Amino acid sequence: MGPDAMRIAAYKVSKEFFELHPTQRLRDFNEWLYKPIVHEWAKRIEGVSKVYDAIIPELRSIVTRDDRFLVILAAAHGTAGASIKAIKSAYPEKRLGVVWIDAHGDLHSPYTTPSGNMHGMPLAIAMQKDNYEHRRRDLPPETVDRWEKLKRIGYDAPAIDPRDLLLVAARDLEVQERYLVDELGIRNFPVRRFREEGSHVIAREALEALQDCDHIYVTFDVDSLDTSISVGTGTPVPGGLIASEAKGLLRELVRNPRVQYLEVVEINPTLDDKGNVMAEVSFEILRDVVDVIESER
Image (tube, rainbow, N blue to C red; front, top):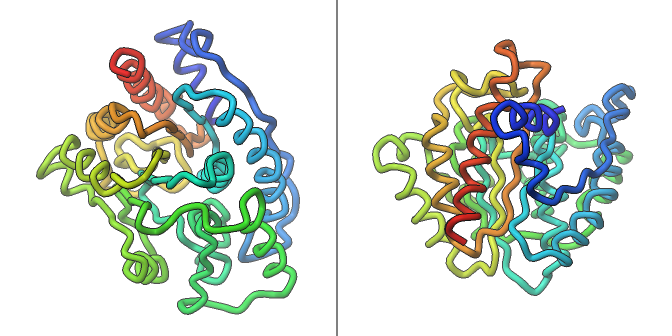
């Protein structure tokens, strides 16, 4: 329902926004939300695997046939692993940079997750990282089999190099994720730096860090925003970005022609006790970014 909430938000202020740009709607697999959980530490992994099987070839086809800037509106952040795999499989010879704007690291595997929620695992899927050395548990063979198959769907190799991954506003990482961040040398740009130095400085440093990448994918989870704003999302975390900081960062990033993909995720209107505020703020940010792309690129 997140993408639909964005369309409703757009209709209130810019009725023609989505009609002005070519769009393609992929099918959802929401029926899996109502199925019983079989794998405790990889909840509904069967459904997630079906999503990856469906999304990756469709998105790969879009990426290869159209060189325009691509905006992806999705639901849970777990599908971002599929987006990364689709882009990498479309251009396997190119080096892909990833800017992960999120309150969380999303670096868990079924071996390390505290919850079993698959939306905390997309980067581990994309990088094929189990973080087995810092595991919390051993897994049933059936879960291991499902997990191994999911990591291979669409692109059977690490789709990104850890040196080409940047975390932004990540402030809720478990010990196991912190171990992985330190071991792999993944950079994290904390929220305090936005207050001290400004969004433009962070954007410039991020682009410099990814200067050897051929193209860059940016994923924006709305829980990167502070809880005063992120009222309609599943896992809000205090101490996040304010809307102007997120907008400033994204505006600066998309001015660079190597930034070719933007994903917006985790809007959940059923959790928004202020109406459709989360989608409205997100659409305001998206419209601003699109204005920059259309006027400056």
